[in-house]
Image (cartoon, rainbow, N blue to C red; front, side):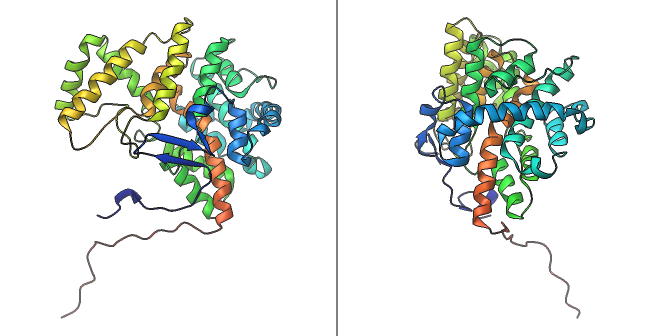
Length: 359
């Protein structure tokens, strides 16, 4: 079938990002992602995505802090959302309660994703949610609320760099979902709830946790080749390798690997880094030998798992934390889609039976 999964089909023009799969490059509003992570805070990248102006981050910081306080006060109004066994289900249920102005405000929606993610983490740990501190940066406050303690500055900085790195990435599945919903004239909140459903899937945002499962199963660098060969012989996928667009190493993986190295040098985690690097090296080698016609290289989820583990987050929180970042990109795309003003309505090719013609 031609263009299966809409591969290669251009559905929109965007000012937000360019994903160059051949060169392994991600440009966000005119900036290489490597020049943003660790340089600009998440709030500034929100300003860059929403208004084209990273300097707006200075004003967005306090406003986002106030929005976190409001979102925390509204937790009781989300019903039993925090009772959900999966963090993504908790986010979908909680965000579905947004009404009126709140369902149209990027700050309030973004704040709600961070607050609900942290509150769900506390709930499943058997503890009460922590109240936000509006004076803190977004990444630091979300990490503090999720962990239930004061985070080390190095870990908060690493999480901030992660949020910046994955905030925007072209027409991925969840972003396309958000734009489809926005094209119908629906509200921002509905577009984000739909995008959360897409991000939940293991082929999109649900893979970082299984990367840690893989590292746990391998255990030591010397065991990597035998374990990987056995998995491939059994017909199973190697998590964290391969990407729908990139034909070389995902540039975001390089950014996150460097952040883990900084944590390791500071004695702030990163104990899995040596194992992860060896598993990556062997996995790429084995896959190239088995599939010389198709290059499968490291994607963002491989080092996402290692970084989020190093900052202290449990693996059940990995995909919701992805949403804490990507909501900024979703909302930017929603605004851009509204400018286009045309409903997204592709066609399909019917291959079913035809009505019988009477003899």
